[in-house]
Length: 398
Image 1 (cartoon, rainbow, N blue to C red):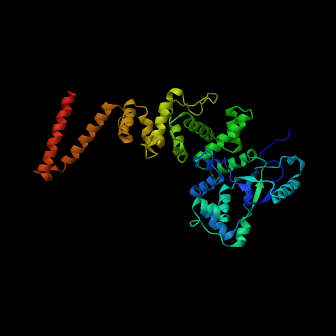
Image 2 (image 1 turned 45 degrees about the vertical axis):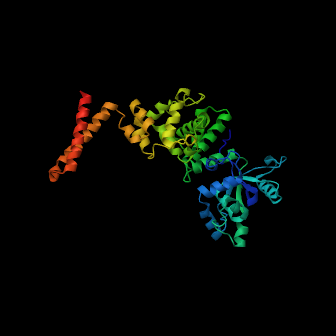
Image 3 (image 1 turned 30 degrees about the horizontal axis):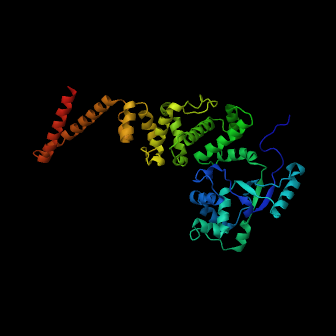
């Protein structure tokens, strides 16, 4: 039996496509995570690229050099004519037929790899786009007519559908050198796994298959998938929680999940024990704690609550200990101070003992040079106050 593999077959058609026939990928996980409105347009996606992906850098290169044909983008058809069939043509004939459809403007495309370049070119060539985004005076200007003509038509490699591109993107952006951000990687991994599940694979089998596709034999993909599902549960099950702040700091959600004590606090299994046949990863009786942990780390914009954890390192060093102590959790809930809550992780008695030890060390240090200020009435008054506090403390302990 002949083996099927991602790179099998003749070379993919390489086409020359006018920029106005190429559309940004509305399902690209790098883009949609930034879009606020569910009914977003291509203008919204171009705005995202401008705001978050430094398209000016590419614009300056294009203005100076034009488009390097050695770096084609990757596209899939957006609207093939209904009577068109790939099977009717050899590879060479297919390229000619598709180019003919392009020349007649009877087909358009979605860019799967190259959204940044495409959005940059659209901004360079279209004054109205720049005006709509309010950046016409800010964005680099293209005055050379030869460069304008050169970048108006883009060399593009055609895949029949996005599913066929998945192995290439997985290798390039998940395990390869040009890695995506944490949320984009997790979203794309989840999409690939879900495709396999919809084709009939069990989830564990689908994960192994995706691991093979992207050449990653570690358990990183499984962790990414579990964390992504946790994110979606926050989005769909926490009625008054805004998940958008998590998108740009998705790696912190992964850090939360990697902590055994935090997993226990929200009732989620370790990744090796997760049962994907269950409806949810977070139990119904742990949703309150789930929202609580997310609020401590990311805040909750819907309730006007700021995060209490401003240093991500404290997830492991402090929050993971706080959630094991009822006293510390109660303190964090009431006072929103993670450092002081951490001091209570061993209970109030230990906290009292720690404070007495600190006070004792401070007094011992002060005693070393107190003789220099003999007779200083202000210092003597402070000592009188300390003595009253010490007597009150002693009285409470008797």
